[in-house]
Image (tube, rainbow over all chains, first blue to last red; front, side, top):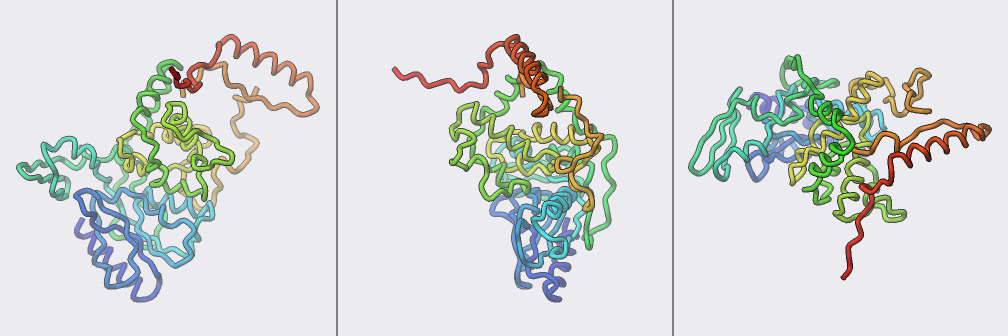
Length: 315
Length: 49
């Protein structure tokens, strides 16, 4: 990871020095362990703030929306796919970007590590294939593979799909991954069981909208939940309103979601709302063979018409 | 999301297809009536003492 960080600083320094870009978007250490925060570096003096490790799960495409400057952005596989989606949706121009690809080995799940620690964590160090977690009176080591974020464990695009340069050699993609085991389990339920499952899943939701704010797809000037003229959905914590919010938000991501996991990561209550977006992702793949954000020259299935579009559901 | 099959219908009807419209409405009404009232997706009013 140190090699990544050093290479990133070198690239950022060069790009800023040559005035290729005005801003470099990357990560710096947060004030707590496992809480790296996005940062915008505009001066060579600040380049040494940049870091990289397994806590850079926030999707940096989210910081590109409608920007007008020349930007260098670090992009993991998922970030790069969301950058492609942003370009396709006219939220940023390809010419504005220097995409610095970051071959990714998965981000670590801060929630799982916290739940396994016997006390407050003071330091988390990644050491090749292991993660060392230190606290006041303990030190534990976990294999990195076992503490990956759920979406990273089933990721099929660890390497950036579009980039101008790379910080390291491409990594091997994961093979034999069953992406939709959880979705199939829900699909197999009857309507009653499904209803109960979602009721329990969403019960902890406090409607803070952290999932929406962390999502690079959610860039509407006024979100449907904030609109009051007309008011599309109630603002209360009534289960009906909560459910409406989550389902509608997921539908807005249909054929666009890259399963970057930003929503689940941001959720203070640890709700796995990815089951909704994953279902739609599965649907987009099965119906149209579509995986979001892989290519720049193809329109997404939901904004094109093809005579052979599936339409068996229309009676 | 836990909505019973039979409650949601999709149909493509031209403005010239009045008889198809009537047929579809009849079928939808029957199907939905068979499933019964959708009480789950209704906000329960708070009881005021």
